[in-house]
Each structure stands twice: as C-alpha cells, then as structure tokens.
Length: 328
Image (cartoon, rainbow, N blue to C red):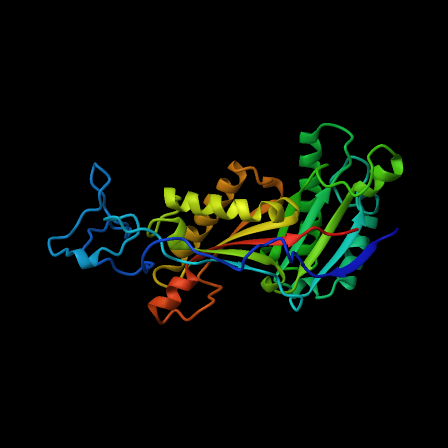
C-alpha cells in the first residue's frame, strides 16, 4: 500500500485584491431591541401590506436605524482575510485501492488499517483539530452522477470509521467530488488509478483558511435567514472579487454565527439557516456545491465580547471559509 503524505498551508496571496470592502449606508443595527418599531413574537419587525415597517406610537425620525426600514441602508464592513500559515494544515492522500473493493463504498480490513495509519501520520492530531475534511474522488469511468454519489459514500465511510476510533463526529466534514478534480489523465489506467482517491485533511485552526466575513446585518433582516435584496447585491459583488479563489478551492465551508442573546437552540437554528441561505445563493451563482458544506456555530465561536453592542454585532456574522487546492 502506498500513501502520499504532505504538510501544506493555505496560500492564496494575490487572488484577493483587497483586505476590506465597504458597502454604503448607516450604522449597523444590533439584534437587541428596536425602539420605535412594532415587533412580532419572534422579534422580527412587523411590516404593513405595502412592505413598510410598522412604527409604535412614540416613533421619532431619529429612531430610524433598522436596515430596510425608512430608507436606512447598509453600512458594515465585509472583511476578506487571508489564511495564516500558523494555523497548520496536514493532508494525506490515500489511493482508493487501499481502502475499498472495486466499485464499493465499504471499507476493507486493509482500508481500516490504512485509516489507522492516517491517524498516526497526520499532524496536528485529527481528534483535536478544528476540522477534519474527507474528500472522495473517482475517475471518469461511468456516469458523472453515479461517480458523485460513490465518492460521497466513500468519504462518509472513512468518516464513520474515524468516529468509531474516537474522532469527534462534529469536527468531520465529508465531501464527494466525483470525477471533478482529476490529478492525472483519465485516458490511462495509471492515471485513473491516481484519480480514485480519498483525501483526509486536518485543519488545526480556522485561521489557516482564507475567509470572507459578512456581518449578518449586511445580508439578513433582523432575526431572519432570508437574504435581503441588498444582501444579494453584497454577495454578488464579493463573488465577482473572489470567483477565482472559490473556483480553485478544494473545500468551502459556510459558517453561521450569532451573539449570545436569546435561547441557545434558537441561535443554533438561526445560524444554520443563515449559512444554508448563503450556500444556496453561491450555488445559484455558479459556485460548485459539491465542495461546499454549511455549519451552524450558534454563539459558540465569538470573536468579540458579548457584553457590548459593538461586540455582539461583530459576533453576528456569516463566514465563507476557503481551503486552497491540495497539490499532488
């Protein structure tokens, strides 16, 4: 059995033209309290039949600070952050023949032994990593649809075995790429054999990934997971800037985050729904959905203090995390 090993860091210098993009408007609104506006039981601003935000009896013009109400538009930075080499990334490429019988997605005993070797070789240790990404690949033999399904089932089989050995299930991300990412020609048996593979990638820390960070107020109404028209425009602008980065990525993770205000379960659900909305938009705009997963982090990964309005506003965000292509 031959296993290819390497350690690499995410590097996309020059792909991102700027580290900060701004969108026009006024102060971003915190998700806590909306003086002057009528709210539903879920905390959303009530709108009239004509789409106008409904005011309370004591509303005054200086209370107009809700995006989408009374002409208030967006003003929040969208950050583009280049990954840092200190967030080490480890990768191992395992040939399909070392894991599975022909055209099967059940690990053989030899395959289980190969995964055990992967755990020993990966640094950082995958059990304590931020994420373990498992990517299945096939050659071009057969239909593209069948290959996509087979690659995903094989990635899931590797993930299931890793969980059985003690790797936490919540850090694993399984992706099936089918025949989309060949590393050799499919015109020869040798090339097809190289293309049939599973990549296991351990990411020590989120900072190893390039990221586009969107404040929630840029994309969504308060306590909602439905993209606003302004939010779609912001995504479209960023997509034009980052299309090359996204098209050449090995893996894309869309993560929703909230502050700690409110119920934990509600925050988790909202973060999942917002991540899914962004993923769906990106797919509709032409980004390959087979390399994307969504993660709802709720309030578990703050980047600022939740004790201030400003800190809570920073924590309410959606991040598009990008891992550069694994080089063979």
